[in-house]
Each structure stands twice: as structure tokens, then as C-alpha cells.
Image (cartoon, rainbow, N blue to C red; front, side):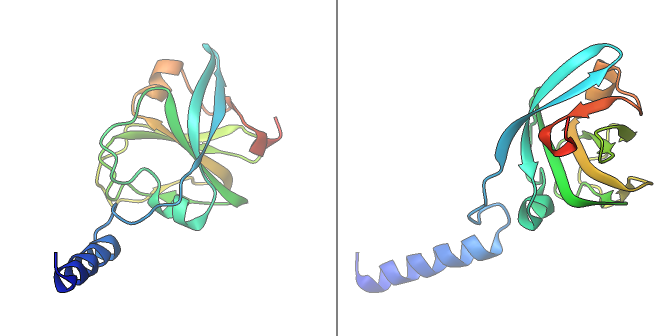
Length: 154
């Protein structure tokens, strides 16, 4: 290959990486165990921890599948009302809004994929746990149940 062709290929690759969502080098999320305790028992999930602006902004966008035992825990680093959306998210999710002490305060079940409609916590929360749609019903999750993770001090 001539140097001109190599230069053009490198330029096109760089352009694609900066313009096409999902192709950019992405900051990896840490994986940690999160447990939910309901009247039906204790349920553990391997959660990606979204605790930076980039990880929170990307969330579960561009995913076409989320296994039943996986989750994403959004750590806001403060307690305040939050709103989420499903932009570029292909998998229907249950969003679990969590107080600073780990208590579930709201559950938004079976969110609409690809929707830009905002889903609000309604009250100040410290975190949001996203799991595949149907999980809340499957484990009998209700407001007042507990989420166990180091960020809640429990």
C-alpha cells in the first residue's frame, strides 16, 4: 500500500471513531455485585457501575440484550431528583429508584425502548438500578424493599 492510501484509511478510521456512536473508545465500567431483598428472597445481580459522567450518559445505550442476572447501577454521587430516558436503548428495562439508605422508592417497569420520554424518580434518590424488563415482577419488588451495595453502606 502506498503511504497516501494508508493516510486516507487512517483519516477515515479516525473520522468514524469520532462521528459514529458506539465506535468510540469507551471507558469500561467496573462490575460489582448488587443484591435486592424482597418478600420473595434475596436476588443478586452483576452490575456495571456508572459513576462517571461518561458512563452515566452512555448507560445501556446500543445494547440489544441484557441477561437476567446483569444490571447497571447509576451512582449520582449526591441525592437529588433524577430523570432517565431510553434514547438509543433497545432493551426494555425496569428502572429501580433508590434512596441513600438503599430503600427502593419507585419502580418504573417495562420502559419503552428507544423512547425519549423522561422517567422521573419523583423524589430525591442516590441511585438508579436498571435491570431487564420483567425482573421487578419476577422477584416481587416493591417500594420499601432493600438494595444491598457498598454505596448504600449496607
